[in-house]
Length: 210
Image (cartoon, rainbow, N blue to C red; front, side, top):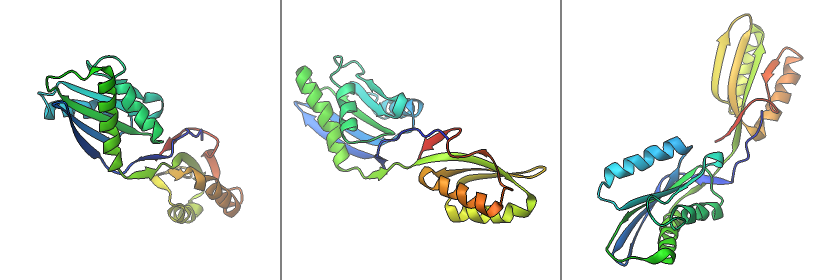
């Protein structure tokens, strides 16, 4: 398992804001989002909901897939300030969007930065943060006589996404909270007395936040 560093929190559910600044309307939203492809789909849906909007600017904070999009606003006045708000809140896996309806009065670069920053900050005031706990994938093989014991151990340990395959032996693939994985492996090694064969365990393979 190779753990991917995760920032402390994501969001439990979407939260919204609405600002009216010099006749321009800014509709902010913050929500949990796993990656850039999902973020682009969310922005596409916003355009379907707001076809008359002047701009839909967005920022995604999601590890290596982070993005900041000004959508026609002067460079650096929308997406980047929105992204900085997310960073300062210690968030990860979060998309911020702001739909702007232009009111006919230009705000200037400084005014735009403040407007987009405030739209995201106001939305975050009503958002519930939830901790991110890293999870890791594990895989092992056991004799048929140990299948029941392993199933009980996984259920008790809170394993998720358990897949069981029957061949010459019984093969398990599952996901665990990273803080609990090492303890479970040690427990099974002791109980199994060498009969649990690990194909993937903490320190190998892939990990994901959850």
